[in-house]
Amino acid sequence: MQLSKLEIKGFKSFGDKVVINFDEGITGIVGPNGCGKSNIVDAIRWVLGEQKTKALRSEKMENIIFNGTKTRKALQMAEVSLTFNNNRKLLPTEYSQVTITRKYYRSGESEYLLNNVTCRLKDITNLFLDTGIVSDSYAIIELKMVDDILNDKDNSRRGLFEEAAGISKFKVRKKETLRKLEETDTDLARVEDLLHEIS
Ligand code: ATP
Image (tube, rainbow, N blue to C red; front, side, top):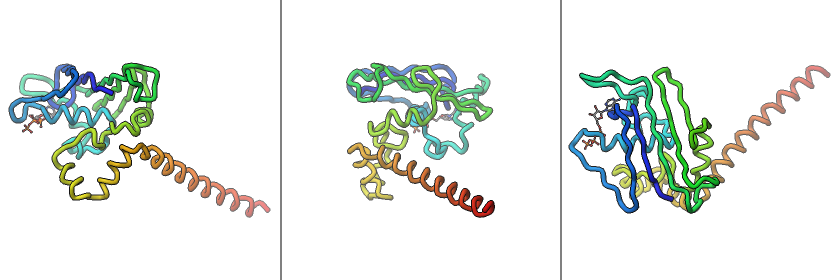
């Protein structure tokens, strides 16, 4: 599966729309300090659903919207789209091209789209589970992560192998099911209390 295109508009330093096409092979992004290289990685992390502002090097989510410059007004919305070539059908969908989009407004509203159709963040994360392409997976490796993996901080090495082996989706589903079971237990206890009161 190949990352084929990144479109950024209104995200961090990108006031104008920027389109980056990734050809086959390695793409290197170079530029002077502070020109926005890391913001590109942040944009990829963000569109994949990152919710932790710290991981985006930001204090609060609103700060990811273009704040303006001396000569330009701040924008009201940030939008990032990431397109994958899915010819080999590694993503479980019939589409040969998959574009995920995330929008965020200053009002605090968020929108997620899958091939231009509004969806939930969960639909996106489910689609990418076990591909290794999630906001905090080994698809994006920063220097700090290399240290954590080498030191096996918080069992990070095991997590990496679980993701690669394709078992993390079952762990997520198990967690969800256990939560639902707990809720059902609470409901049952409530019903029993009510029955006790009635009889
Ligand atoms: P370095 O090589 O030093 O690591 P870099 O090329 O990775 O730098 P980034 O960290 O990606 O640079 O970009 C930093 C720039 O992004 C700063 O100039 C900062 O002012 C700008 N920036 C960050 N958030 C916003 C925002 N919301 N609106 C406008 N500009 C922003």
